[in-house]
Length: 192
Image 1 (spheres, rainbow, N blue to C red):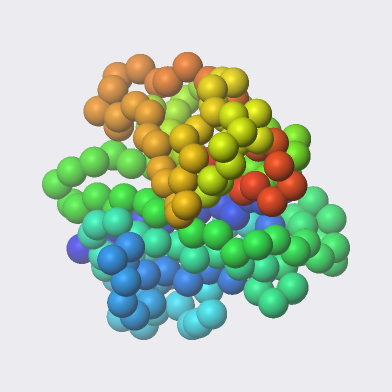
Image 2 (cartoon, one colour):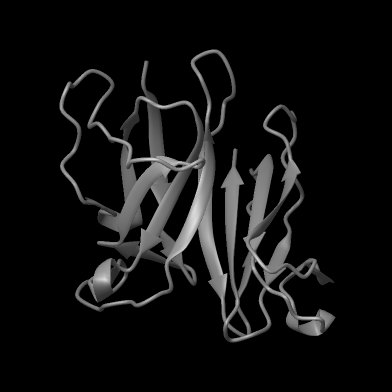
């Protein structure tokens, strides 16, 4: 049985077309196939690129933690709001849970890359689970990324904090995620 995948590539608040997306199991291994529907035997041809308004969509024959490795496709990614305008960004990874046929009702509401000295994002009112991934080792609280003004812990490698659960009947209150250094980047995943 296949699970549906819908993921929107957004960088600094802008949907990105023609971004390169590689799908693998989070534990590693070969790239996974993405299919156009639940039944077709042949997968979509590689490479997988974000399309209209930054969306990557299809069907996966995979259950577990899925890693999406996203890059600017060698400088060929474009802003959706200004076709033909190239956008460069540092590669980043997103990990999503692909539930099995008997569990979970995960639906990706939004994924955002927040970066720079004044990057910010306020989570949506419908999100029941929010995951924030960052990599910042600064000992200065004011320079580390923050959630609602509280600095995230220093880390030498990617770290993730998750709020809420998909089993919760009510969504989470909105949260403000901010970056404070030019070399910061924080990935925010909202699930409904």
